[in-house]
Image (cartoon, rainbow, N blue to C red; front, side, top):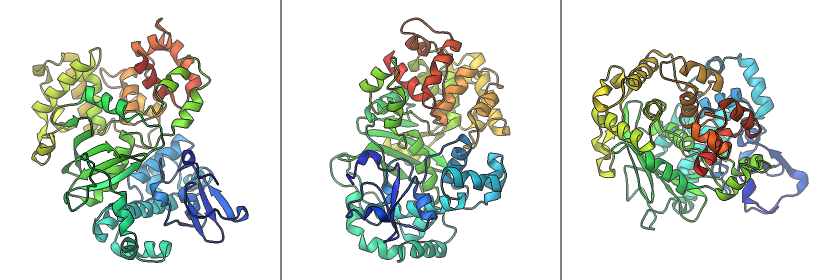
Length: 484
């Protein structure tokens, strides 16, 4: 009734008399209470037969527009769906990837999400397509491709079945509001496809508070020249998706609780995966109120969460790149690790002429490039050079990976089997490359001193101390590192 923005994205309301589901902040007149039903996800509301509201646009809700996972297994399956696993794959294949039977996966989704995996995937496609229609000038065929539809015919049929009109008609009706949704440029004007025809711009809404300045500062201290660039306005980096090179830029969107993402990439079909990875990299789906509530009873963390509200996990674009940087950073300063990473990129990376104007002239080296690279010539000590080569070879032969369905325990077990990779490095990779909210490098000396308030706890003592911080221990790590 109060349209409290703090609950936006945490639940959806559906009205029986209209057949529509909305965000809690919808400006439409409040319906009679007897006609309202509540759902934890847009997918659950859609599964119950309701269609998304055209006024409040459920796809524009902060946090994940589809779900809030209650278990690692379902969470892994949902991340696979976000990456398009069911756009061109089957449900049995998805079940096999998470290691359970199809029937059991359906049952878990029904219990935790209130919708089947196929219904979650269908809602994801529809809402992302709706966002692209509203916020970009992409042709309808490219919208269908970017959202994961197998054909334009299926896209049109799905849209008509949900909204009662084809996508072209809906875009025509709301063209004015789509212009208003585009992000302000750094000079305060409104960017548009007419100004930058090679880019696609989207909003990434988040739940306030969001400490974007701290996140930028974290990346700035670790920026690899040519691969990344950070300035007062935002973050930029070069990327490769399906063999195609491009780059993206992330900045704060003025006047609203959202980041602005600008993507320069030739393949519209990769847009959904790019958005999903950037969302994780900048932790826009986090619920800061849930984290604050978990820490408010802890004498160590309570003052820190009050001092720095809106703490986010600084994710990484590429898992292999982050693993290399983690090895380079073992027992050296951040500045020294950055210098070594810059040398590796400059010596073994791939030139990228398409991003030169944005200060992005290099792609970070692939595992193929580093599997036999003479890194010692760059000043990398022999043991770490051998570890990096071992990581590259393990990536190439499949012994380690960054699968969304992998449990944290399995992830650490695979990585510590590699030479030079201990529990600290594995957990640091999990925290940044996988953005796992409960990743916890307990062996970290600075972390142990911060938690012990000057006295370095043992790793075991810190593990015991951290049990009260689950399932948000990674956020506790970031706060304690800041305090030190």
